[in-house]
Length: 255
Image 1 (cartoon, one colour):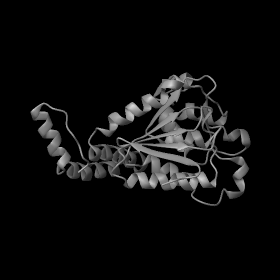
Image 2 (tube, rainbow, N blue to C red; image 1 turned 90 degrees about the vertical axis):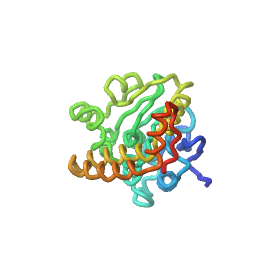
Image 3 (tube, helix red, strand yellow; image 1 turned 60 degrees about the horizontal axis):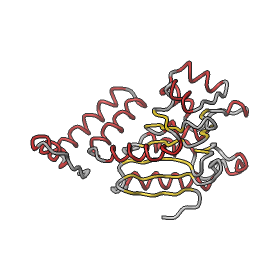
Image 4 (cartoon, rainbow, N blue to C red; image 1 turned 120 degrees about the horizontal axis):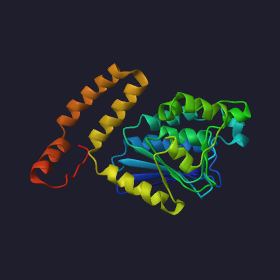
């Protein structure tokens, strides 16, 4: 499927979504609509087992909401819907933060399960909305403290602080930092490694953890028990057990 504001490519069970409105890949109504459509299609696809989100060019992962498109803020999908679809996905998402990730761009990265960032000192990440007299509206207020803790999150949001890759790594905001030339290669290698894991088991962990964090441990445990039965009866479980005893690498099919 062709899009106007994003590029979607799939190879070897890894799908890359590139936000394609350079130089800063700001999010307008068209991009929101296409982004949601792509995420929903990926969730149903058997050809995708891991997802990378990045930005076109080398200046911006995403600068968040396109302020010149504010007239359309009430049209199309709400940004929260997109972020929720990502954070609650049964497939792992990796943010490959190749440039500035500000406002909604930072919230997009926070919605992903893993965050890799360039070490380019000109690239920064932050929730800068309070500078404009508004607040993070796509889940950043809720997700950031889960990643770096309450007091650090409050300090970061209330003072609109921005961090480089190494600084973000130091506070636990991102998981790994790479030279710009290696970022996509490293994110792809990580996604490929994830794609070789048992898809049903991966889904069980992602969905169960998401429900537990959102609704509490008791609800999460209910989901865990349901998935445990489903995984235990799967062809992948038989393949995994067989491979263990035969001392070989398992080949999982998500069945």
